[in-house]
Image: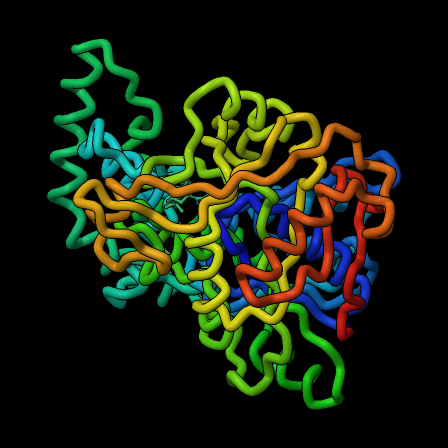
Length: 443
Ligand code: IMP
């Protein structure tokens, strides 16, 4: 299993791509098209938001599990895009139980953010939160519902009903914003997005287009595991964005931690042998929320530029900072991590001495070696750093630990030592081959 060990964007896509080659099946288990990654293969660029990148291996079963929230229009766009690039998508499987993102979920996501104003979460505005909220309220609409006109219509009607008053208030709010010259993007076409008839027709068409891919993905996992083959579970977002364990409310609305894979893919806990946490050699965060090691100075900007830290999904600049070992140890514990994959080590070349946060200090003097459970402590936590020598050499050509500068190797040793898990893989550049395997994968 691959999980994000920080705030997302750790380079999971690249590691998934590498491990998918060895796995017999790949499945995503949470999140939706708030995720995004780019794979460059033989000079050609492929962009993914929903489909596991393992699809680039012809015929390999790549599933979107029941725990994912799925925007069918986006998925169809992705399928068509890949087909246009000559990719065989016959391995795609979509759980019949996955919940759908509906047009009103996008509307509610934007409205929620506008209502919060300066306190906004900074969501990707893809409707993720409202779709999961409807799922929990038992007002969600599932992939299988798109195959039955009567049920689809009934369910959309039931989902719209309790929201009518919100939509009316939104319409008033939109008019007021427009009069005030405020950007109302995301709230436009309100009537069309809550039109029962149009929506039913649109989603029936999607259902028709997606029907060949709809499957019992939990059973598919079981069949694969039952013949002693390997399933790769592909997490999205990251541990610190977890709905239960992250920096709530500045989190996503699903559980990116390893435990969620059992629920979101429909397998038992004993089926998971290895959990790899993916972490950058430094930290980034996109959207609002506490980020103790954030660098708001020139160094932060240098990391942002050297690392090309711009969101794949929203194009927003990512906030950058030093590696946070308090948060990383927390992620190791929460995920039962068996190894770390450390990406983007090359970005640290030439930045001078490297700092790592080893504990937090609260203004009242209390120190925290472990991630504090109290949110206000996290908000006011000051990181305590240990400084280690940096390295100036570019390392993009290194393919073994021995080829790395001593300071880079020492940095890796420090991370393994302080987290208690081995570093199995090191990323030294954006290319697929710019990898140092330090521990061969078990698959
Ligand atoms: P949502 O998932 O769109 O509701 O956004 C909630 C928070 O999670 C925001 O801070 C987003 O920026 C963040 N987020 C969601 N998906 C990703 C991701 O794939 N990478 C990084 N941050 C993400």
